Length: 254
Ligand SMILES: [Fe+2]
Image 1 (spheres, helix red, strand yellow):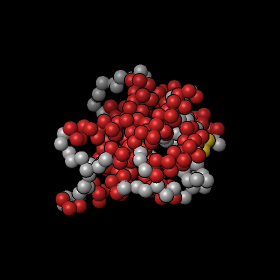
Image 2 (cartoon, protein in one colour; image 1 turned 90 degrees about the vertical axis):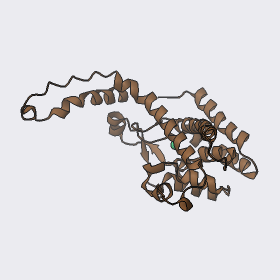
Image 3 (cartoon, protein in one colour; image 1 turned 180 degrees about the vertical axis):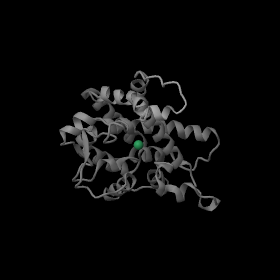
Image 4 (cartoon, helix red, strand yellow; image 1 turned 120 degrees about the vertical axis):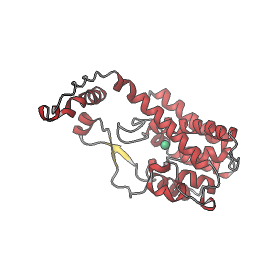
């Protein structure tokens, strides 16, 4: 997927409008100052560095974050309609969604991903990005929260936990927070679940947009009728079944 210049700018303005509409106090201006200062980096940032992941194209990050914010507002309403306690604010919903993937930015001096210098990987695997090895290793939530501290932007406890836990149980490190069996140690607000669900929804939409039609339109050879000892007659039965996926990958990268 590619976004043209007009789409990139429209998405960027939507992103900034969320800050202007929902964030209050001094952190509103601090966020605007930071995002505007690194405007070019953010506008072109992909949401991931591999085409197999979601929104791996220039502008993919902002497009993804806007979708997560929009989804988070609606998921928040859904949880409240079902009677969960309203013990976090709408500002916290937007702040957490807005900054949940901030760690993908890199740090102030180093971009997290760079154009891939390997022509082979670009041509044969579609890997147009590579990790910037100048950057210290940090998880995306850790780096995002660290950046906010460097910017002097206050983060509420609810926002902190929502950003930290936004990958849910896809991140083993989140287990102590999400797999607690005693009431005292369970999360006190639903915000981390809401941000996780919004992120999951957005990433799924982005995956389906990129892949489902390609996969479904690729003819897959019907499997041969099973015969006794057929595994002995065809020592590599899985190769033919994988042809469809191979063709899909080839059409994507060409
Ligand atoms: Fe995300």
